[in-house]
Image 1 (cartoon, rainbow, N blue to C red):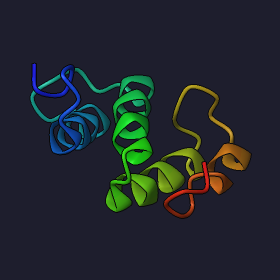
Image 2 (image 1 turned 45 degrees about the vertical axis):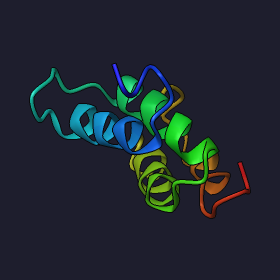
Image 3 (image 1 turned 60 degrees about the vertical axis):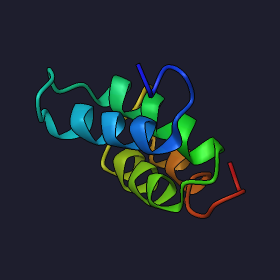
Image 4 (image 1 turned 135 degrees about the vertical axis):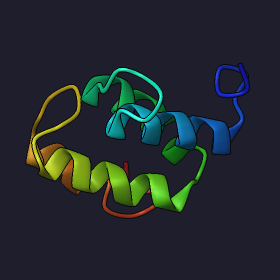
Length: 76
């Protein structure tokens, strides 16, 4: 509920959980969705994880090119 209401740390944590399968079904798409929300609010670690996630073929597009856009806060 906190993530849905915009809490940046909750969004990051939920993205992390989806990415690792910790407590929820593992989903690269859901992980990217929540991490993107956190990154857009300036969560620096979310930017880093998104970059790695895309570079490894995860996320909605599975494109390493999309990873380049998440390599630093404020560059998406």
